[in-house]
Length: 232
Image (cartoon, rainbow, N blue to C red; front, side, top):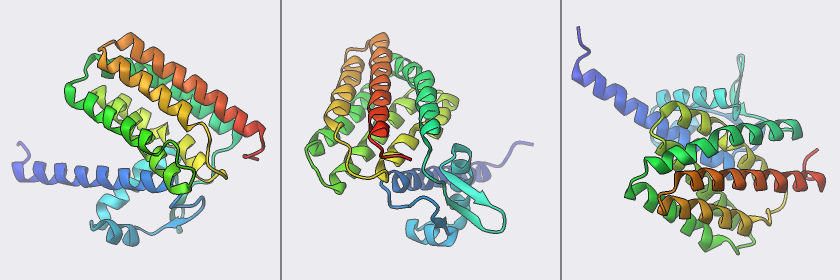
């Protein structure tokens, strides 16, 4: 027997709430509002986001699979520790395997709405690129995360989008609490502008190549930051 329409709609509604909570928690992690090792109380998050406990629990379970959140027996969920030097290398290596493909596919399948949304995130970054305070950095990195998520979801391949989302926030999260404000925002903005230009030109190969160049440059900049002793 087919599932009643009301039940299907209820399940879809719960899934939407879980996605909303997931995105909100990722943003808090990237912004540094949730510190490494900090416990996460489901009831507190549910109250803050004005949702029930169920979508919060579902979102935390999803985040556990990404490594951003840890679950401890009899203690509940807490924010994971900062990624180590080796973990950061592995994270960028994984992004290099996924995101150029995602950019190519998303560009092939892009509509005007996606391109406009990408342009909006680039404009958000441009508006704060010269800000030197933490709020400006947080705004820049929030837009950075949105830019990459839009491309991942623009593939219209939920498995590729999930895989990309699962690792996309780690580098930003490390940078949020590794000390100081990164000085490479102008470079990152220029690289995003190159990716956007490829989308606007409807050139999938150029989009993939621009994304690969962006990630390779990011890897070099992170390594330079590591070499200067900002990560043990």
